[in-house]
Image 1: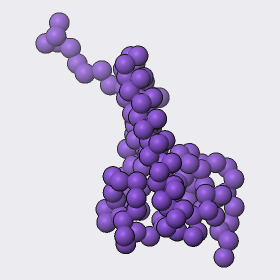
Image 2: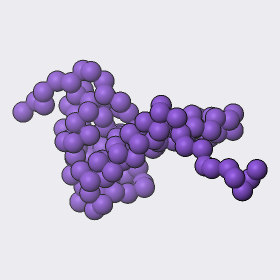
Image 3: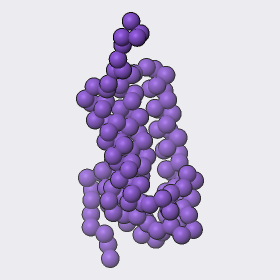
Image 4: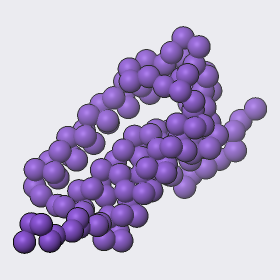
Length: 132
């Protein structure tokens, strides 16, 4: 039976989440650029505030991408341990976001206005035009 088995492909909702996460991740990385990418919650010395592309809608689209893709994988082969892992990922990212947002507020005077226009991990629907 093992020799005749084929890999199980994700069903449509799981595949859609996985592909949306991967696409959003690549789009976010392309807009931000590798030069600004860091795993630390503190921006690089030469960082600029990116507010276009997916960053026009959410402040942390790379984290959104990771959560979407991993949620798709979780739905594909659900288990309690995988669900706990996804919840742990969410918790870690929320802590990291809190530290990042504090650093970004200190670094960029325009960050408060940016917060009012964008959602944290998904679009908020409260988009207002940037103030001059």
